[in-house]
Image (cartoon, rainbow, N blue to C red; front, side, top):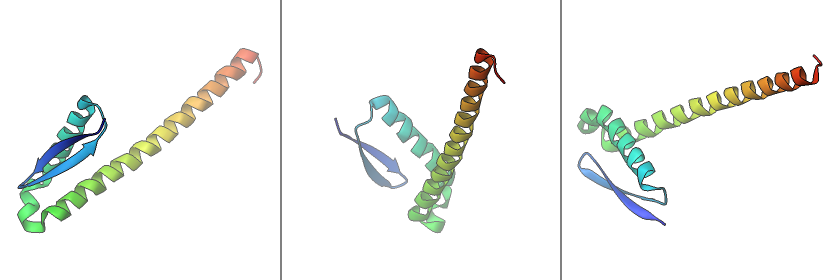
Length: 92
């Protein structure tokens, strides 16, 4: 079921529409607010749009890094499973 979540960043309020569970919504809102706090002091200097862009860029970078890490770990697991299968069959 879709629900609306209000997020206040600086002097602006944003509405996020989501069908995620409440616990996930709270984590997302908390993460957004924590990230915004890092840059809030620069809002008057560069504008909120620039701050939001930096936040999006940082989160995108984190997402790319995590995706790459997942790929590497998945490959490592697959290789380990292949070695385990070979060991069980008695062949090298």
